[in-house]
Image (cartoon, rainbow, N blue to C red; front, side, top):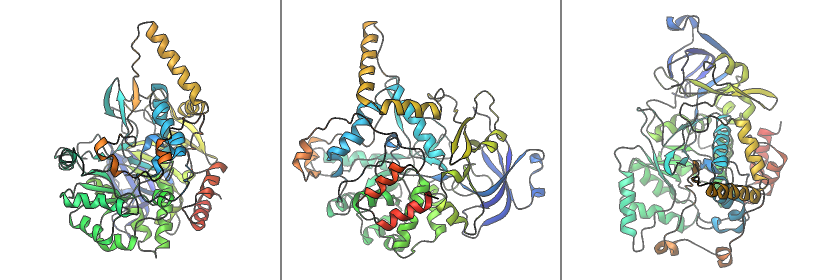
Length: 533
């Protein structure tokens, strides 16, 4: 087990216990993976911290950020220029550009082979870390043919690896309640929802803006499949009465405003959401049609909130990525706020602006000074990382973000990708993605050579794709296919595709933002103002 050092952070402490609970000059002590003490007077620290490292952050200390909706495996792909506005989630996956440039590169190449899958997992995990994310939704892998969740530096909702935190479950496809196998599907959903061995149940609920999308909520309601375990991802197609019903049943919601607007041209009615009292959190969705990271999603959430009349305060928006997100997962007693006894998942942002909550909302990746998970410094200012290093056997990997020197510590005991660093993953993926057919040919040739030698060719490490699912024949009619030519077409995988940048940057990225037809010019300008200094 990795060593967990004892040390102290000094800076402004935003506890997230209440809007006013900010310690402008505070000390936060960490021991054995948990917060040992918080005080405004160094002399009041427990005696055992005498002589321990004190990191002078010169910044603002927050709980680590929690992203509860992310298809991480796809976060190597760049933003897709959505060709038109859609009404529900059954429509856009059939578009030839999506199939050729989003679905197939992952399904037919990157997720299928150990060399690419390992690099992919390392890259997307590091990409999340450098934005302050400490908890995300898990990546399921196939290891020597057996299914398991990926084990890395991040904490994952489905595999928190702490007995105090109940593991979540999830379901991506819509539950269709018609057809010959309807009773079995409903029964399976009910069993998963009520499984006493697990925590909350994430379900992509009513993603879209038409009655077809809303019908999936009605199906749950009619079949009594809404309770306090249900977390409805998106919930975009719901009306005010639907949100009220979710709240009355104790269910929760994950809001993904950028994905909503990129695909459907609108996001959830925030006044109705607030009036319902429904507990909600934030999620990025994925880089092809969403934010690159949770810091970007906070900016989109802030803008949507402004457009709808400042329904929520800046504090409440930050809660959606911290304290309320922890409460959504049922982890509120252990994460989401900075309090003695809680797990030490912590984010430090450079500086001390007047509004601590707006400071976090506006922060970009270069301002991320330190990311701590379970008491271990995983990413941050290179000097801080060196001071907090306790594992001399595994070096800190250096990189530059916005002319600032940063460092990663990604080693995790028993992780299958300990031999792959961020820079290696970047180089591997860049090479593979610039010639996908060539990569597939090399893999087939290697397989043929091994077969000739009588060697087992089963890939050691591959990825399961929760967003690539087969539609059962008896429910096929429930999915909309407005363009029969699109449905019947089978476009080949693109020959090459750029690796998505690990930060919100790059001329090509802003060109793709400008080309989006479902988001406003005002939102485009707001995002550019946050990143193009």
